[in-house]
Length: 237
Image (cartoon, rainbow, N blue to C red; front, side, top):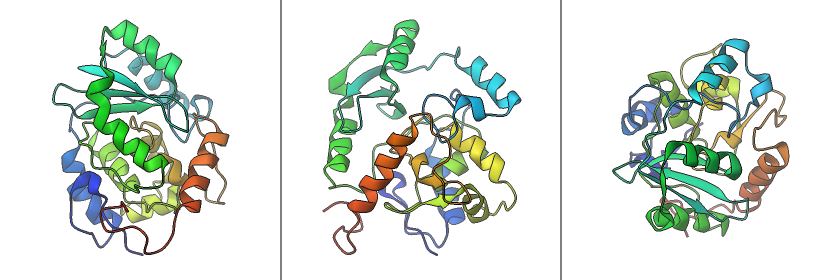
């Protein structure tokens, strides 16, 4: 099965997820991970994380986000907190508003809703069914392996899903489903990097920090808005 690289990475259509991630990962900042917390927005709730991962997550929560500013975007799925770096690139997108506002207060980040207007525009196009992929610049911070997994998530077509095992196989790492799951759980950019499109091996929704109703709603929304031939290569009407 072939996957098309989304506009997010401005890359030509690849022959496989593995090829796509080699190119896409270069567009994600190769720095130390700041977002190893699976409980803010992920497909694995904190309680389901292995002890070592949970300990690491707790420690990383205290790390500074190094964001230039943040803003709040109202969506049909709930308010989303958007974090940008000094270059205006997307660092983080999270739907746990109260927790994110606390993070902002502790970090001293300034709120600037106007600065996140482009992210807001694309989110609103998505929720109106007018956009399937995103082209906002990303600055998600993670290890090389995390970047590979996050890039692969962006290659799962709108309206479709993969299991953790299938994603590991597509990355050329058969048997690494658990490692892929842990990397998926550290995804700092909700929705735009679609970790909600990954399911359990039996097709179950599995855990989701945003809540299974939200994960179900996102998947149902995308499936209901998938009409063959309606969208062009850019993922928009």
